Image (cartoon, rainbow, N blue to C red):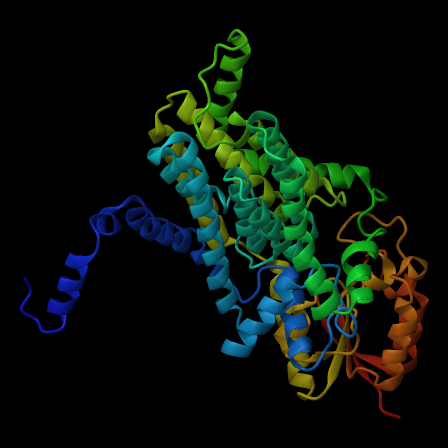
Length: 509
């Protein structure tokens, strides 16, 4: 027994803890996974901002803190949970840094890993559970660093997504519906997890004679009530319906460059495949073995899997594929939604095939190390330019001045610490330009409904002190958007140039 007066009570308290709590499975696994989550995402702290989405959320949070109203004077095509989380973090820690959100993102990854470990342990045993948690954290950085190290929608959506699957697996249908709602209120495509939830409900009813209408009612009630609470009470119903559901038709369309979309889709899929190769090998071997086996020759499924097979995992993966393809943008961070079902399928295949874990873990660790090093060395020229422009704007303006960024990089508002002159933080709302889908259907005529009318009203009350033209040679450059060209010609003069980004200042007459 230690003689130190401080350590003696602690040692006595530890001795009174139950044996399973001191040496149990989760007591040993949680700290190990927490350390791995912190290690794999440590590079997230080396940059002030990783992506325009982070910049958009940070700017939104400041606008909300200044009295803005979500889906009215503060708008986006995303659900409200993550903007509110950013706002809360800024309220507690201040808005000068995103480090609190990066910490919360690590917590979200850890929660996802633990939920995957719980699913895998229930199906294939303790070792598979630990492997699922560790492998998820290793492959969670297996895309471009801008997609995996940023604190954005998909990262915070994943815990609720896996929780919905886990609750359905345990036949806790009301909780599965609530988790699905939380997922969809973080990002709309998170609602795709409702497909495997309903599949497991159908299989459970078929095999166990469960009353299907009652269980279905609990799922739908669990999903509908939180969404109704947010839409009707916590936000404006009309604004929520338009911005979250009906107002994204032009944005989420197939109109655009097919070659560009196909190239992005295949490129990000190839990067993800490289990160998952350690798990892909046992999965392919397992599929090949099942094809060769006679019908009914495979081993019976373990208890705990709703429906008694891994079909629910394949439906889980199919729902994620549908979510990634929705909108036809195929950005890298969309592919994060594929990671949980892929990890479960790979771990299940390795467990069922008696594959040695060491090669799988070694490859995944080596791949993660490569992506980790890539994150530290990532050039980020575009974001570096945004920082330079923001610094120049801050030097030429005062805290009470407003600015307009005509482009797709709203992080400039947050980096410059200047208020936006309009609720439309990117030119996409006013031109239908959507992140590289080409120049088809881009222009004033394709704006969000009544956006130009609202924009003109906002600027008529107070012209911004600074306009940053970040459009370059894009389809929405001022020479192609007459209203912006007239605005610049009538009221502004050029005062700075960084790359092809032009800074204009208001001319006082």
